[in-house]
Image (cartoon, rainbow, N blue to C red; front, side, top):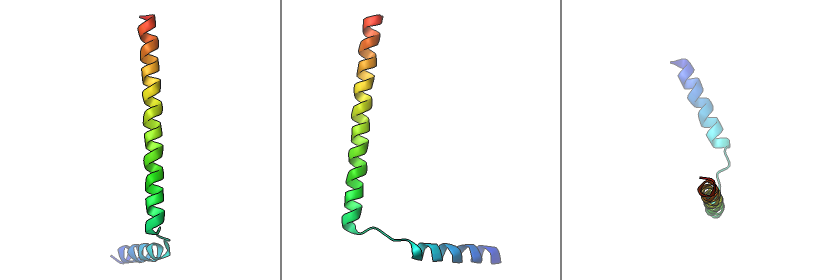
Length: 59
């Protein structure tokens, strides 16, 4: 039981040391993640259509 208290005491200290983002930073980071995901989707969509077109020509 003592080890659990020590563990959660360490967790509490680490959480206090965390620098949390401001609302403006959070919106910026969220938008960045959304745009990067969108770019990946578009990239893989183009690659998928390209591979499909190549396979249609071959087969």
